[in-house]
Image 1 (cartoon, one colour):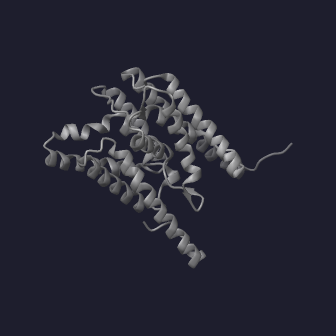
Image 2 (cartoon, one colour):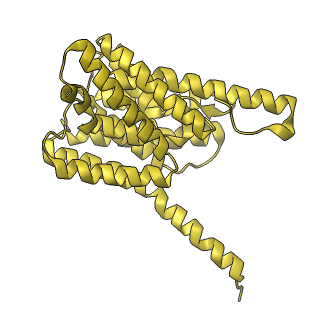
Image 3 (cartoon, helix red, strand yellow):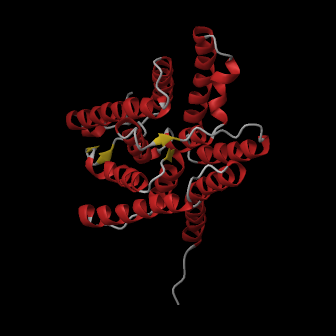
Length: 283
């Protein structure tokens, strides 16, 4: 009978823990959807959510199989489908299907050096909110006074991004948002509370825990990720002052891919010049 060594047995435990952790983000976004629905009814129609999820899963399976000839872990596609289902509002079905399809396609069509540049759901949602305004709106419901729901979601979210080693991204963005919210209140004359309150809503919780922390489109250094988070907050600040309702999505859609492209290009150039010095990016 085949046996394993003590070292091999020890290596199995971290791998199992890693496998268990991979289930947490899909479970977490499911919790956000359920809490949002049973607390405030954020879903217009369960069918629309299911359609977005199914479209994401099928599209990811199809493109990964016929473009790369591989099978993919569908956790990311499940998160994308849920994000689409909760972040857009429409009284018809097709925008949910198209948004989910655009989101998944962005990973396979818009890439550089084999790496995709946009967070999938950010691309799809931003595209539809900009080009299909007559049929699509964004989620604007907040948790309001339901402190318990917000505390649970934030606790789980912070734990997950901490385990994924992206806590600095979330905290940098949140701190920047709060500071800039105060500055906006001085400029616009609105109260600080009204400017900072979006952080309590499901839209921002999906944004700070899934979109800006997406490892698949992150730059390659911790310093770079912090800088990008600040730049996203600054871009959102400018867009908000310009009257853009969905400023966070558009800010990430502009800043994130540009930073990712520059980072990948710098890595490629360094590798071409000195392969032995191919270190993480310098953004």
